[in-house]
View 1: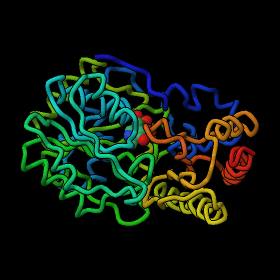
View 2: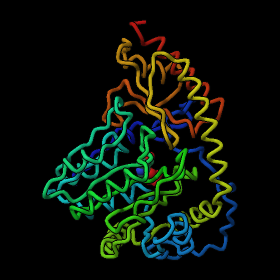
View 3: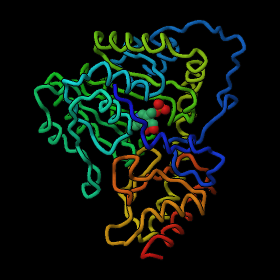
View 4: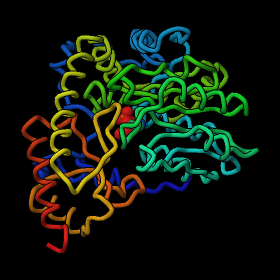
Length: 372
Ligand SMILES: Cc1ncc(COP(=O)(O)O)c(C=O)c1O
């Protein structure tokens, strides 16, 4: 494995130091919460090794949200969704295999396969197509040694979503060629409209991944999960988990269980908060002629770009944004995209921080456009 640190992690707000950022629009989650918010009294929690597959009442909650035919036995908890993606990539791909993956993407979906050294075909999503995924492109990219197709919905960084019909088409392509399809569903509960089914509920070829990080606002609780109805594959994933760390953290899994147990009460307050943030950014975009966007269909981020005809010096833009305004967005290069693109998170900042951050972006554009 040839590990390389990813810019999205090297330059992340937590690595820079949260205290140095006044307007943090770089996060892809909702506001971080505390143990008190979860109402957990854990003084009697026994600090033994945990069930290797995951805490049973946590697995039940995940299975209930996934719906039939997903059962507890089809679920494995992991160290965040990141840990799930790592286990899946390293279990399924070798240097002799081929992967078809959507780009841009959450960086780990690309970087771990790169570290493995497998062949990769990228399905590059285009602004001009509304960042929509055409399953025919996936079918055309398949090779005899393709082992895995990898998609993300709702998509990070664009907020684009696969509707249920498109998701079924992607799965049908995978089934027809006996390859697996990984669906990173980390933002599924943040869909603005109807949620497509959990992919793993549709086929044993599909592998769904999610976590408590984004929707539940507790990314410091390192709990994610894999859902898959292929029992042999799940045994392989479990073997990987056991070799990495035996089991999950009992503390983290207790907190994750408490978060999921808040169920609809939490999810409806989350949706209200997302709607508010989205309305703020929508109003700002309407009055910011130098930017254009594909409106997201879910999640808590969007991926606008400086219009191609606007003469911007992107280096000046990002420098002024950070140095003069202490404001941060996710620059395009985090996603292997042109620096004219920027990911803006509207779920994490409080209302005044979001407004201040958006004003800082406009002010930085003033400084960076037309040599100003
Ligand atoms: C699409 C997607 N998948 C996975 C992850 C990893 O999240 P975590 O490991 O915190 O669950 C992220 C984090 O940004 C993400 O955006």
